[in-house]
Length: 156
Image (cartoon, rainbow, N blue to C red):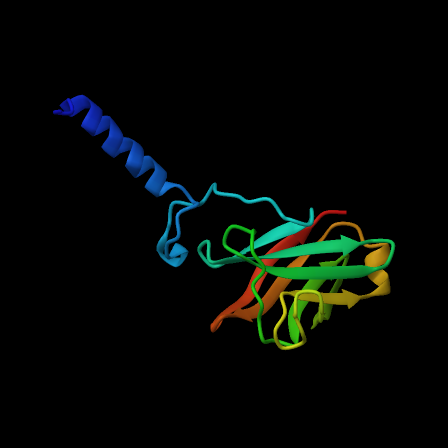
């Protein structure tokens, strides 16, 4: 049975549209058309894009505890990425102050994560309990790529 040309063309175009979607595995480091491309933070925090759709860091502040937690995530913010670093460096600018924070690696026995092989990092600081919105930079290395002074902004 011969397939009409218009149906073949429609099938080819549909395949191209699906291939262009973000769910296909590819080297996201070379994609430049993701400027308006966003993903949801799995813990309800703030996502910080690392590189050109390479990875994400999610920051979540617990005001009551004065705690800031970071998770290293893949490009789609779906899977956790374990890194070897014992700390992640974060600079926070709040009011007229600039504060350096070292988020410590968190071991999580349920998943086998341990210091030196984890995706979760935390820091506690009393000023986080009362700080409003603040911004700053984050520096970390993920799978051999160093991301230095990546800007972020956290709401209240």
